[in-house]
Amino acid sequence: AQSVTQPDIHITVSEGASLELRCNYSYGATPYLFWYVQSPGQGLQLLLKYFSGDTLVQGIKGFEAEFKRSQSSFNLRKPSVHWSDAAEYFCAVGNKEYGNKLVFGAGTILRVKS
Amino acid sequence: EPEVTQTPSHQVTQMGQEVILRCVPISNHLYFYWYRQILGQKVEFLVSFYNNEISEKSEIFDDQFSVERPDGSNFTLKIRSTKLEDSAMYFCASRTGLGLYGYTFGSGTRLTVV
Image 1 (cartoon, one colour):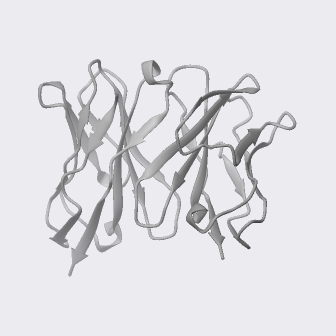
Image 2 (cartoon, chains in turn blue, green):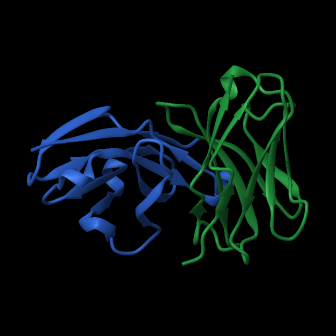
């Protein structure tokens, strides 16, 4: 079965500092990988996704993620965090072998200090 | 950009009452999903629907839940007799027939059972 691990429940970074949120997945073949952001009480906003091709994926709001097959990872990065980036971030994995449903990680809450 | 529309955005209901959550998927999408997110927890798959029948359901999706596509545009989730533990954010999603391309979530319905 597919599974997603986000090892960090909370992360605090200073505004302007770089950010890396970790995501590890468990799946035999190449999965489809997603990062979503959620503000409190709000819906899910897609930041970026990886299906195939270039392993470095660019997304919205200056985010990027790198797929590393050897490490089963899809970490999200941003070179300079803004206070408005404070939110909860979810990594998700899906594949047609599992009915194309998405399996989400537990999320990482990002706090930004000024 | 096409959107998945969910109504209402927030619903409060008495325990034991029936509720229907409504979704209008993107018009050319073929596969439809419901997910649930209990407050403070991760997003969980409930059910997938294709060609007017359930494709897959999770163990959460017990007999008190049902889904329907009553016409060409709506996709509904019914909870027959709500329990306190059904309080959650419910997300609808839809996608095209091409794998996970175009996978789009609605903004969610927050269900509060009192």
